[in-house]
Length: 199
Ligand code: AMP
Image (cartoon, rainbow, N blue to C red):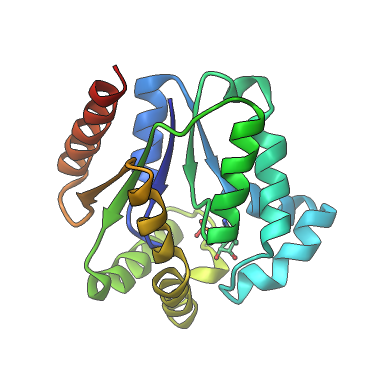
């Protein structure tokens, strides 16, 4: 199974991706995680991404497309994957189509977590507080002004992916404001629907 979880920062993509990984035996490919690892390791990709990420801006398409292209070729991705945080622009979505096509692969589903944006900022601030209390690192881009910029980018750029995938007939929306279990149930229902359609 190959799917995309779509939604603004704080929508709960990471939480749901973790559950889907366990359930379907597939890997979670989070470009945010990959970029943060590259920054921590000080690789050339990390050096290029560091300041852009700290400002909450989008990294160049070519950079993220190349890390995803490398990652999906790894053996652990052969069974399927969940893309979390990628694609974020139409150019990335088109590049993804092209790379999947080259590998004779298809996307099964694009599930969008639709959230009340007023509540998002509060959610991301809570995540930062909880991480700090648990002694976990707090992301520099979870500062309120930066989160606002990331949400604005989602509305301006990433929301264009909805019509792109609707046209392909693989987009579904779930209520990202519901409880974690209810969101999980809605995602499972959306995936079951795509499986039935494909059968
Ligand atoms: P995330 O953890 O998905 O919120 O990503 C954290 C940051 O990494 C973003 O604010 C961007 O700076 C960068 N990033 C992650 N994924 C992408 C992407 N697909 N395109 C551009 N920048 C990205």
